[in-house]
Image (cartoon, rainbow, N blue to C red; front, side):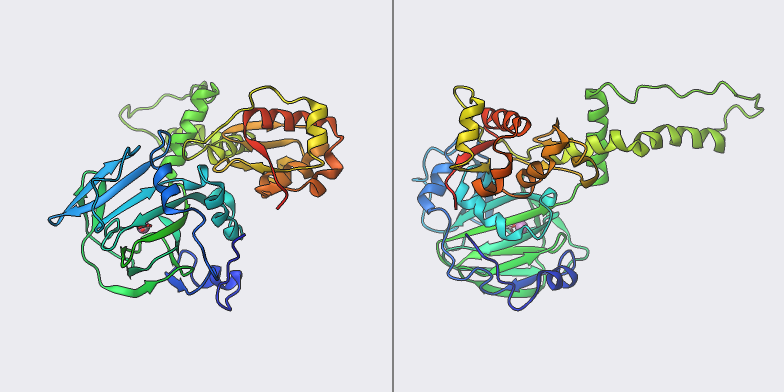
Length: 383
Ligand code: SIN
Ligand code: CO
């Protein structure tokens, strides 16, 4: 269990002073920090087919990028390269534990846990992210520079690397294991390893209006909705046929607005959209379907744990009516089990004690059988 210490600052103070406003170094945010995963295990994960990984290096002043899965690292020297894995939380339960201390922020804002191993001189280069990141320094030391937000010129350092031109630092620090650097979107930054080192970035991303709109359009198409044509049976004779009148413009806008104002429709879309997995899940569906009595019995012995990277959310006004969203799908359930569903969505791990009241509830057991069969939840030891 990692426990976050914001250095005398309350979580509320952090949010009001720094969140989305300015970067800050939190020295020893994680006391006595040890890497959740060894460098060998990390390098092994980047050899897997489903994992998104990159090797970045600089040769004769030129940035190079290679993409995983990797077969070997023998061609690399002992300097100036970095191995980056996206969504490490989907592939390592131990690494996913680093997300837990940040649950004072809503999980729908979470993007993923990105991690890197870098040899001395290695890094990903100076860049700007469009997400809030908590860069948690693991073993080894890195030198970090962060510039102010504002206009910066971005340059394509390699077809896969968008960098930023040199910037003046407002933060210039050496981070050691357990130190955390929080950076809001828009602040240029660069970390360079001083020693072989690991770094774990817990990233929070917000959707742009354009990605929401294009997701909404896909949702309408998938559900065969929004196909109604504009109707104007009360049309009057006009004299200027080239004009789009204010009234016509308003009715065109209303046509679209009505879809957004239909809360049951738009909420359904938002629930599906926000629970869509951002990166491939490491799904291991059960080989044989679970039986209800077996699940009921096991719930009394084992905790249940949500698969790393799986997203499960609810809206406070519809969860009590028996609706939640899991992995991009609307899930309906008997509204009497809503308190148990909230536990599944709010917590990564739920203990037998917490599930005691639901162990003999048929509606809950049936849902659990389904979730376990799909590999969305799995049995875990009580922590
Ligand atoms: C890194 O781990 O080297 C990069 C993290 C970041 O800049 O977001
Ligand atoms: Co970054």
